[in-house]
Length: 494
Image (cartoon, rainbow, N blue to C red; front, side):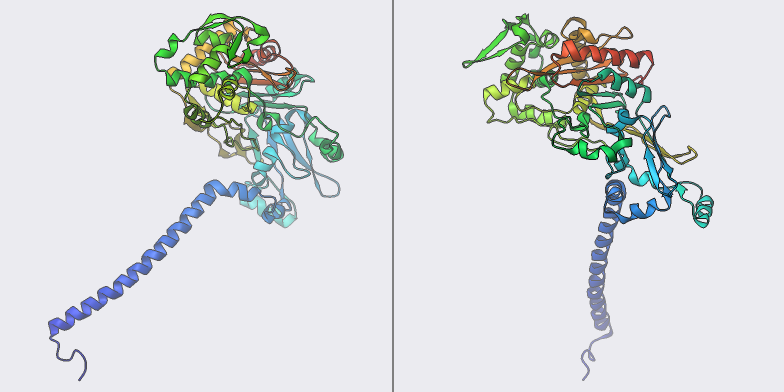
C-alpha cells in the first residue's frame, strides 16, 4: 500500500501545504543569508568609494598609478590666486620633469614627486594622473601616441601671503599657519628651514645626513611638536569656566611673582608681580600663579577628556601627514605635573596647526572646521571637475564660552602681553606663549590669534624656535601677517 493512500483529500492538501512551508523556510533562509552577504558587500563598496579609495589609489604599491603615468601627463598644482606652484614638462628623452616655480616657499604643503611622493603631491597623486578631457580627445591622443593632460588641483593657499610669511620668518627656524576660521581653509603654511624641491635629487644625501640638524624635510607646521607654553592657558581657562558655572568670575589671585607649592616654586616671567588678578586679567598678563590655581582645582579626567575633544592624542583631519599633539594627564598625575600642564609645560606638546585650529574655533563661535588645503580639481581647460566644500568637524564650545575667551584674548593684545601684535587695520585678539624647552630656560616664542576681533577673517599662529618670549618676538611677526591679510582683504567674513 502506498503511504498516504488512505488520507482524505483535505488531509493530503494539509500535508502538501506543510511540506511547502518547510521548503519555503529553507529558501527564505538562504535568501536572507545571500541578502546579508550582498548588503555587506554593498556597504563595504560604499565605504571604499567614500573613505578608503583615495588612500588605496595613492598607495605607492598600486600598479595602476604607474600605468596611468605612461598615458597621462601629471597635472599641475595651483594656488587659490591662480599662481602655478608645480607643473610637469616633457624632456627631450620623452621623460617628464616636475618644476616648482616658487622653490622652497611652498615646499612643505606641496611636497615633492621625486624620491617618492609627499604632502599634496602624494595625497592627490591619483587625481593629477587622471584626465577629464573629452573622450574623443582621449581617443585621438591614444591613436597618436600622446599623453592625455592630467587634472590640476587648486589649493586654498594664497601665493602672495605664503611668500610674505616665508620672508617675514627670515632666517628663523619655526612655522606659520594662517587659516580662515569660518571655513578651515588654510591660506598659508610655512615651515623653516625649508628645501628646494627642484634640487631634491642633488641635495637628497645632504638633507637626510646625520650631520644635518636642521630637519629641512620636516613640516614643522603639521609635524613639529612643541610645548605650547601660555597659549595652552586658553584650554585651562575653558575647563575652569565650564567646571565652575557662574562662580568662576569670583576667582581672585594675588600674584607676588612666585607660586609656591609643597616646597616647589613656579615663577611668572622675570618674576613679575601682577598683584590681584581675576581670570580675564590672568590671561591678559599671562599670570602663571592663577592658572596653576585653576589647574589644581580641576577634575583631571574631565580636563583630559576636553583636551582630547580638541584633538589632542589623535591625527588631525587634514589631507597631509601630521603628528598627534600629546598630553599626559590623569587622576594619578601629581599635583606638580598638573601645575605644569596648566601653563602648557610639562608633558604637553602641540603642533602649530592644532594651535591655529583651536584659535579658529574660538573665533568661529565654538565650531571647529576641518582644516582644508584643497579647494577644487579642474581639467586642463580649467573646467570644474570637483569642488571641495568646507566641512565642520564639531561644535566644541558654546557661543558664550567662545565669546568670553575671545574677549579675554582681546585683552591680551589691547592691554597685556600681546600688544606687539596689534594691527593698524583692525583689532587683534590673541595669546602669547613663551615655552621653556631646556633646563637653561631657552624658550620657543608663540603667538596665536585672530582678526578683526569683532568679525574674524583670519587666524594666525606663529612659532619661533628658541627665539625668546612670545610677546617680544612672535607677536611682532604676527602683526606683520595680520597687516598683510587685512590690508589685502584676505579671508572671508563670517
